[in-house]
Structure formats: structure tokens, C-alpha cells
Length: 148
Image: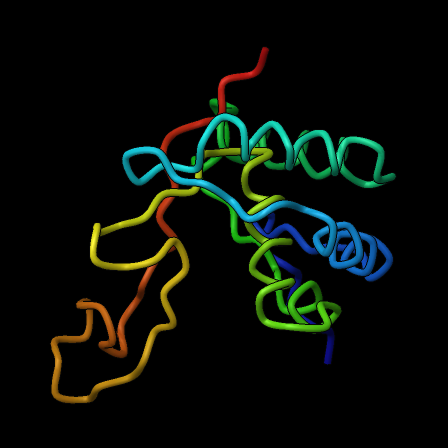
């Protein structure tokens, strides 16, 4: 029986790219937020740190096509499990993810009382689409990143 094809909106990260991202993230400074958005300085530091990695341009091009092309659905699903597995700590993993998504959009804090990355618990008594419910919980990003 043939395996189903991978949906075209999924963006896998090559294993070597995930390892390089995780390694690179260890040297990134603590990110800063301005009015709940990742600061320009933090975004610039992330882009600079990732710019020399071999798969960065391909990742950005793929995401740009998926997010902005008229024939696309306007979204992308980033497969980040390998990246989080490659990181030596949860903090390094979150720094790597923040750096990666800052290449294509602006990470934002959804609510002032929460950090940039909030662990999602599971509560079966809450409505499925609410935070900690068992429904779909999308990652929050602010529009496309403006390219210089």
C-alpha cells in the first residue's frame, strides 16, 4: 500500500538544518519584546545568526511561496519536532524556533500576562478551541516580515 503524499503546505526541516539551528540558537541573546512583538533588534540578531546556514534561503523561499503566492492557501505548517529534539534544552529549542519563525513573520505574545512561548496544557472541561482545550491551537504570528 503506498504511503499518502505529504501535503504541500508542510515544511519539513532537514535533520542537518535542525541540528545547525539548535547549535546556532545557543549563542543568540535573550529576545526582547516591544508591545508584545519580537523587537526589531531581536529579529535582526536572529536573521544575522541564521543567514549563513545552508538551508536558510530555501526555507524562506518555501515559506514565502506558501504564505504569499496567489495559488497557495496562505499558510504553512512547520515541522519543528526535529528541531526541538536537536536542542539540548527547552530554552535553546524555543530560541531556535523564535529565530526560525522570525525569518518569515513576527512572533508575538498573545496576551500581556503570558510569555512569548506559553506551554499549552490540556483540560478536557474547557471548550475545545480555547487555550488548554483539546482543539486546534494555532501559533500566533503578526503578518509577513517586511524585507529590507
